[in-house]
Image (cartoon, rainbow, N blue to C red; front, side, top):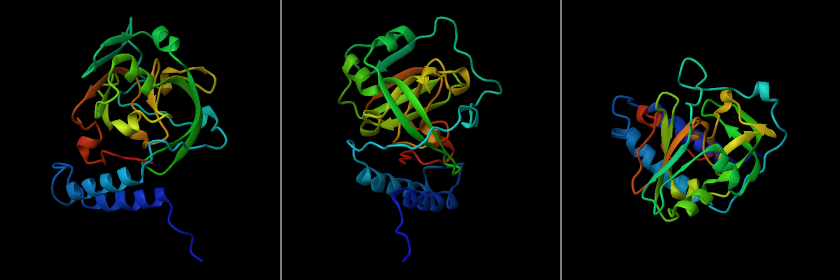
Length: 226
């Protein structure tokens, strides 16, 4: 008997169909735009806000791929703080010490790259839902994440952003996050593909509209659920 297609198999097939129709000059128009909207509807239907994923053995850290846009590993500017803004009742600028003072969550999560590889690590940090609560932004529909890695950015739907396994991570495998993996803080979650996991965070904005993203502007799927 043929093994039934998994949820991830369905997403890969849908993504392949979308890329086959891709016009990167007009990524949200034509057949690609229709496929993107269809993919988003299907993934949103299948996604459960309460569902948590459980990963297997940790990938050796030296084997966990490193990725950044800049030609060299980005280094946090002096006096780095994470700015929280947009449609929030209480804007904040959080230092690393501020983040570490918020309730900590530890999670073993599997990273899925759009190129087909996966890797597993133990992450620790603060849930984005805790930051939303701190700033009075629990009901805002979209969240935008900006990076000091040459302006990299992405935006997420609220359900994914406030998922219990969506973290603003400042630690990896029991030690402080390294520059190679996004220090001083990065976005990490079980529910999105790798290109949505913004490293080198500098700003989080809670908004009433999506703002796309670095790769999304070049034709990649916006929702990108795992």
